[in-house]
Length: 383
Image 1 (cartoon, rainbow, N blue to C red):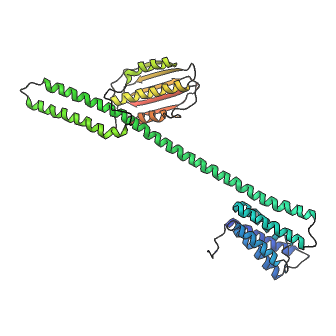
Image 2: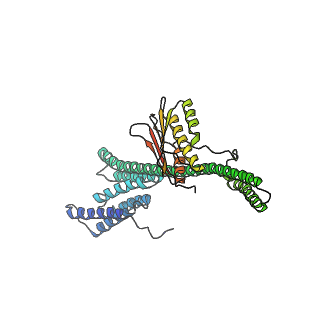
Image 3: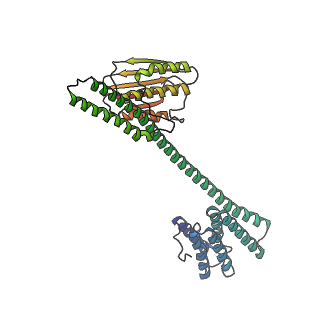
């Protein structure tokens, strides 16, 4: 059991002090009664507990009523205005700060106290007294309860918003990891395919060597054996990134040469799409070619899904010697942003662009539709 009371909030100390000042002013301005030492003690005992109205709301209600009742026979506190306001404050406070059960008990205590006080006071007890007192104390309790409920609802909304924000951040992080895993799986296939080609070409060269150069033949045999071992290690090392129903494919991943068939598929699905190429194309690493293909593919898929009936799309590929620029613009009426669905398309495109030191911009176009623009530097390297 705690013997030392906790420090009360400064605001409640100020409320208690204000009631004390009101008690002094009431005594100094009264012409009917004198302010005796007992009255001073009763006033102090009445206002001091107010400082703990939020720390011990129900206890302060009980203390206030007991103090007023105890000093009523020897002091004038029962008729005083400061005691009346003190009881209003504790009635409000118990509804605003205590659990509902304690708040109801506090209201019952105040009601019983007032009824008993009216019953033993021959000058009170009329219908007007009951109505006036009931409106004041009932209003104070109701106001405290409503403000408390409003605060609880605001806190609940705040916690729900924080929870939604945490879930959104977690979902975004999981989406990033999923897209990185997808990109890694595709690059796995690119690397495995490249190694397979190198091993095959090395074997061809080794078999074409003249028999009078056994050292070179042995060296190429070691290269071929090392390459085959690297393919096996790559399968074991990166196989964990692959889903259970996926298998390693040694076929090359799609690149820019697969864009015309992709556009034809989109047209058959109902999206009118055209493509223009500006500048002189430059050779790209297999991984970067895959990235460019996926960015265009995801942009067109989004246009087909959200553009609406009759939407048209334009694909532009620009080569300027230092970078390749991809631009996809549709005139559809869809407003759903890329990545809003389960595919997390925008996240995947940004991850692919960032992988090659590129940038990607996506959003509604000022003239309508959706616009995607990616710039991949030709000096970018796979990391």
